[in-house]
Image 1 (cartoon, rainbow, N blue to C red):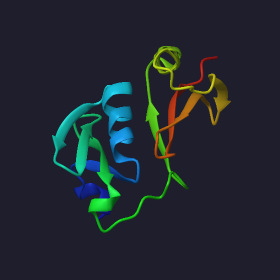
Image 2 (image 1 turned 135 degrees about the vertical axis):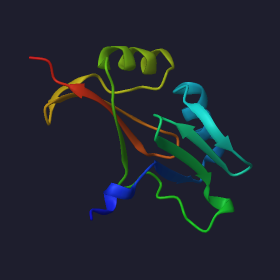
Image 3 (image 1 turned 90 degrees about the vertical axis):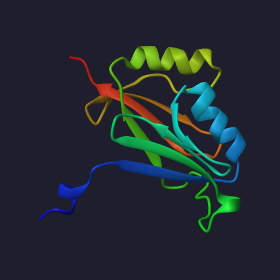
Image 4 (image 1 turned 180 degrees about the vertical axis):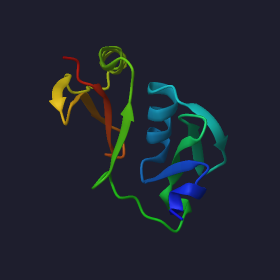
Length: 124
Protein backbone atom coordinates (compact mmCIF):
# COMPACT_ATOMS: atom_id res chain seq x y z
CA UNK A 1 0.00 0.00 0.00
CA UNK A 2 1.20 3.46 -0.90
CA UNK A 3 0.81 5.96 1.98
CA UNK A 4 -0.83 8.41 -0.45
CA UNK A 5 -3.70 5.96 -0.96
CA UNK A 6 -5.10 6.90 2.46
CA UNK A 7 -4.73 10.69 2.20
CA UNK A 8 -8.10 12.45 2.18
CA UNK A 9 -7.05 16.09 2.62
CA UNK A 10 -3.87 18.18 2.47
CA UNK A 11 -2.91 21.26 4.47
CA UNK A 12 0.36 23.16 4.24
CA UNK A 13 1.12 25.25 7.33
CA UNK A 14 3.38 28.31 7.09
CA UNK A 15 4.66 29.50 10.49
CA UNK A 16 5.13 33.28 10.52
CA UNK A 17 6.90 36.01 12.46
CA UNK A 18 4.87 38.60 10.54
CA UNK A 19 1.55 36.86 11.15
CA UNK A 20 -0.86 39.81 10.84
CA UNK A 21 0.71 41.02 7.58
CA UNK A 22 0.86 37.51 6.17
CA UNK A 23 -2.77 36.80 7.05
CA UNK A 24 -3.81 40.07 5.37
CA UNK A 25 -1.80 39.12 2.26
CA UNK A 26 -3.54 35.78 1.78
CA UNK A 27 -6.98 36.94 2.93
CA UNK A 28 -7.18 40.44 1.42
CA UNK A 29 -4.64 40.60 -1.39
CA UNK A 30 -5.09 37.07 -2.75
CA UNK A 31 -8.74 36.79 -1.67
CA UNK A 32 -8.48 33.24 -0.31
CA UNK A 33 -11.52 31.83 1.49
CA UNK A 34 -11.16 31.29 5.25
CA UNK A 35 -12.21 27.77 6.25
CA UNK A 36 -11.18 28.00 9.92
CA UNK A 37 -9.64 30.56 12.23
CA UNK A 38 -8.71 31.09 15.83
CA UNK A 39 -6.41 33.59 17.56
CA UNK A 40 -3.18 32.12 16.16
CA UNK A 41 -4.07 30.21 12.97
CA UNK A 42 -6.07 30.82 9.80
CA UNK A 43 -6.83 28.00 7.41
CA UNK A 44 -7.61 28.94 3.81
CA UNK A 45 -9.48 26.61 1.44
CA UNK A 46 -7.69 26.28 -1.89
CA UNK A 47 -9.76 23.41 -3.29
CA UNK A 48 -12.24 20.92 -1.87
CA UNK A 49 -9.41 18.88 -0.33
CA UNK A 50 -6.42 21.26 -0.26
CA UNK A 51 -5.79 23.94 2.36
CA UNK A 52 -3.12 26.48 3.31
CA UNK A 53 -2.74 27.60 6.92
CA UNK A 54 -0.91 30.60 8.34
CA UNK A 55 0.20 30.16 11.96
CA UNK A 56 1.60 32.74 14.40
CA UNK A 57 4.94 31.14 15.30
CA UNK A 58 5.07 33.04 18.60
CA UNK A 59 2.09 30.95 19.75
CA UNK A 60 3.33 27.54 18.58
CA UNK A 61 6.25 25.20 19.15
CA UNK A 62 7.39 25.66 15.51
CA UNK A 63 9.57 28.48 14.19
CA UNK A 64 9.23 30.45 10.99
CA UNK A 65 11.47 29.41 8.12
CA UNK A 66 11.45 33.02 6.94
CA UNK A 67 10.56 31.78 3.46
CA UNK A 68 13.83 29.85 3.10
CA UNK A 69 13.52 26.71 1.04
CA UNK A 70 9.77 27.00 0.51
CA UNK A 71 7.80 27.53 -2.70
CA UNK A 72 4.02 27.30 -2.76
CA UNK A 73 3.10 26.34 -6.32
CA UNK A 74 -0.36 26.89 -7.77
CA UNK A 75 -1.51 25.85 -11.26
CA UNK A 76 -3.96 28.41 -12.67
CA UNK A 77 -6.06 28.61 -15.83
CA UNK A 78 -5.07 32.16 -16.86
CA UNK A 79 -1.56 33.29 -15.94
CA UNK A 80 -2.07 36.69 -17.58
CA UNK A 81 -5.12 37.40 -15.39
CA UNK A 82 -3.23 36.36 -12.25
CA UNK A 83 -0.27 38.59 -13.15
CA UNK A 84 -2.63 41.56 -13.78
CA UNK A 85 -4.48 41.01 -10.45
CA UNK A 86 -1.25 40.83 -8.47
CA UNK A 87 0.03 43.97 -10.20
CA UNK A 88 -3.25 45.85 -9.54
CA UNK A 89 -2.92 44.93 -5.85
CA UNK A 90 0.55 46.53 -5.84
CA UNK A 91 2.26 43.22 -5.00
CA UNK A 92 5.12 43.50 -7.53
CA UNK A 93 4.96 40.10 -9.21
CA UNK A 94 7.55 39.10 -11.75
CA UNK A 95 6.65 39.36 -15.38
CA UNK A 96 5.39 36.18 -16.99
CA UNK A 97 8.39 33.92 -17.42
CA UNK A 98 7.80 31.62 -20.41
CA UNK A 99 8.96 28.04 -20.70
CA UNK A 100 9.96 27.32 -17.09
CA UNK A 101 9.89 23.50 -17.05
CA UNK A 102 7.16 23.61 -19.71
CA UNK A 103 5.11 26.29 -17.96
CA UNK A 104 4.54 30.03 -18.03
CA UNK A 105 5.24 31.28 -14.50
CA UNK A 106 4.78 34.32 -12.26
CA UNK A 107 6.54 34.61 -8.89
CA UNK A 108 5.78 36.73 -5.84
CA UNK A 109 6.75 36.61 -2.16
CA UNK A 110 4.45 36.92 0.82
CA UNK A 111 5.35 39.20 3.78
CA UNK A 112 7.08 36.26 5.50
CA UNK A 113 9.33 35.73 2.46
CA UNK A 114 7.66 32.56 1.20
CA UNK A 115 7.84 32.32 -2.58
CA UNK A 116 4.56 31.76 -4.42
CA UNK A 117 4.62 30.38 -7.93
CA UNK A 118 1.59 30.71 -10.20
CA UNK A 119 1.82 28.72 -13.42
CA UNK A 120 -0.01 27.30 -16.37
CA UNK A 121 1.24 24.97 -19.12
CA UNK A 122 3.13 26.87 -21.82
CA UNK A 123 1.21 27.56 -24.96
CA UNK A 124 2.73 26.51 -28.28
